[in-house]
Figure 1: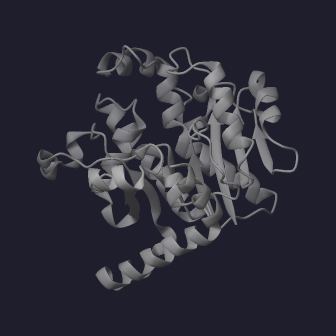
Figure 2: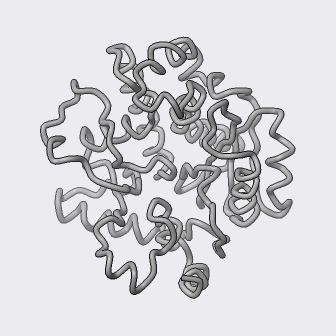
Figure 3: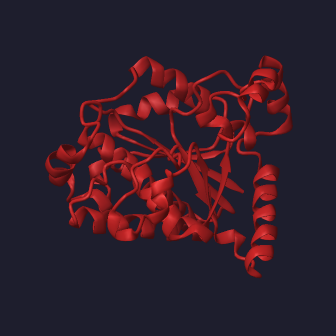
Length: 294
């Protein structure tokens, strides 16, 4: 069984309009039939409910009016608004509430797992998926495809057995990557702080419930550690990147950037590169229709 976790909160510095998000929510909530656990503010409850067909499972949580209401970020509003915003090299397009939305993702995932387990609902895999990630027309329904997910983890288990003689694939964390660290980052160390480079993609990640609990605990441990040392931690990707380098055997990934440009022109770009994982984890029928469109 697979669970998707997501959230939508209004931001004072959102990069996109409400109309855009309404359209994207319809493509996600309105078309993906996989079980979804969704966090939002009470004032947006009707919007989320109207985007989801009654026949599709939805668990809606409006307990947190803002991302700063979640326990890991409860006391950080002031630090995010002053110290962190001053450190942001992109402060002109980010705001403290955006940092909170990004950094709330690991907690939202584990909170969803715990809440559903109390109801006797246990999942094999749990993935975070950004609410606005399905921006183009698509034909996916049961996504990610359970057979494809099992295939990826089985292959990871095989490769792990070859490289380390162990079998711990069920505790691996999946992340797509959209780039790679720079050459100079080969000398990066923990004390250098979060790795601010376009590497990991924070729009989709997941694994087993056990893996997600480890990931959340580790994320907030480093979030708090780096915050105490006055590093910029407002961008979740930078902390994700650091965890990649600190715990490389814990992550499995998919990389699209090494495909030759000529092949993309000849065979199609498979949607925007950033969201290639939609296709990669999609079922055969949806993938076939998308290929026809390309």
